[in-house]
Image: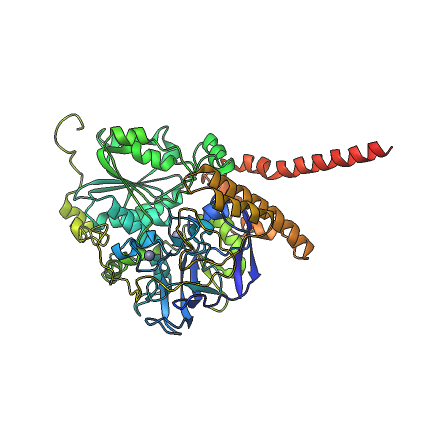
Length: 382
Length: 190
Ligand SMILES: [Zn+2]
Ligand SMILES: [Zn+2]
């Protein structure tokens, strides 16, 4: 089969790879029909995530058709059209039994601090991902769901991470009616977080980014009030000024490590790997939220330490909430919202790239060429 | 109004927002959100029909964090460790917990070694890496790469100058060391 293969930082090619096989009785093999490139794939692409091995296939956002199932699979059969959450999880461990699917203890031998994620380095279990023609899906009775007939493919791909994570981020903010919510980052997750904040009753939603085309999308798609931080000497002071010097009630970091920070941060984090990533957006979130407020962290951070302004968080009495999203827990409610017309997830998709040209897709997405917000990968046979 | 008790007035009331924004407030009740409560004990919810999953066969000594008691019942089988990078990786897993910086720094170092090993291997196998197609740089021409450099605050502009140094410097160093080595040998012969 054809698959995207990592060749080193900023290097990717499509290779002929052995088709995945059933390795556990509850595995399924899924023929991928749509995959997406995620902002957090860029951490792998830039070589920032420890134990990203040459030869690995990325891709944790994908949907497809079941091709083959293992002997203990009961809930799926070949031919089923499925969406697969990015979390790999067993459904039965201490964490899964409590709904913490992202924190499953039975699927990632390489680390205990993070669960299993498709195509996300050995730090997340060493599973190949869905930017390929076929993918192995462990615990097929637990993770995947049938795609409802009324949901189209591109909407379904958004459910597997970006939409669910954005909505989850708004939830972690514990938004109350009339709250001022500021979202850092107008990428897919930030856009969905901003949109979801309204569903939870926000009184004002502000989105901060450095790319005008993404801010334009935030204004149009998520009805947000937008500011380009490069136009302000100090975005934190600006946010204080527009909130009567109080600050936002809730701040959402939808950027993560490697926010395009200062030159110094670029060198210490991105290049010298002295930090787990430059936490610029997180520090802005801590600084610009009001005392007693809540900071919700959705952006991806690696396992290494980052220079986070913890003292300010302490002195301000902030609640910091964060996790990888337990994707499948969000789905029933999100289905309702799409059916009711409150959300149209595929509205943020800007590019469709054949699997064959995925290297160019990564470069375009990484460099933010051509107004790229969300690129979708289409395998040949799909 | 941070200096007086009231919350600042919003420009739009809840009713105005409800009429302007599709779905405003449908998830207003914090107790009725999908991840509330954060932890709810319900072992039958997920579709798992086991309390401990069957174990996937271990086809080679699978590296694992020392913070795990045993190899987890399911794991990924992509890219088993091999070569010098494999030695470094196995050492990082065997020796250091996830709490130690050495663990992660060794893994990152192994990643760089892995890249070098694979570059050489690909060359020997007759399928060398192609810096043009693999970097995706051709999309610069197809996706308005030049236009995106002007007035659009392109994301990678701030660090492009150092990228050049970081990418080229190691080759220059290797070249220089090689040159010195050759010189050393040839001058000694004379
Ligand atoms: Zn993702
Ligand atoms: Zn589990």
